[in-house]
Length: 136
Image 1 (cartoon, rainbow, N blue to C red):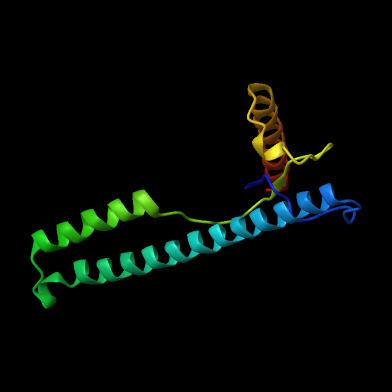
Image 2 (image 1 turned 90 degrees about the vertical axis):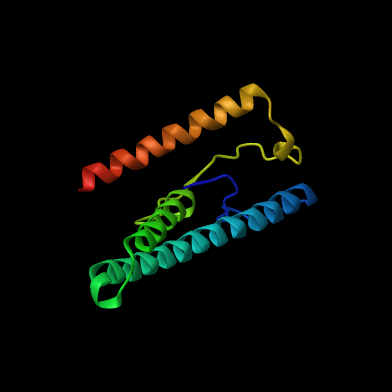
């Protein structure tokens, strides 16, 4: 997971611009944490639905379930899983560098800035993947 708004800081803000910048980072990093929690919750719900579906499928004769009903449930489950499912096995946080934080950085969507951000994220992700592969 690439954190565009890191919550860890090396030093406390020393002026109003840095305070604004830090407050923004905290606000958006809290949103990231909430998204991770919601994804994990949805995954647990989908796993629970899968367990119930398998129980129904494996006992369809005892329960008197119609194949069409089971097929409909299976199609809905697969669609929910495809549209909303996720499985979080492990999270690696990658934070972007902020050499010169400024008040307008959230509004800088210039091609050069976007290209550099993508390049930085890819480079850091590659580094984490290589480090992880060397530990396995």
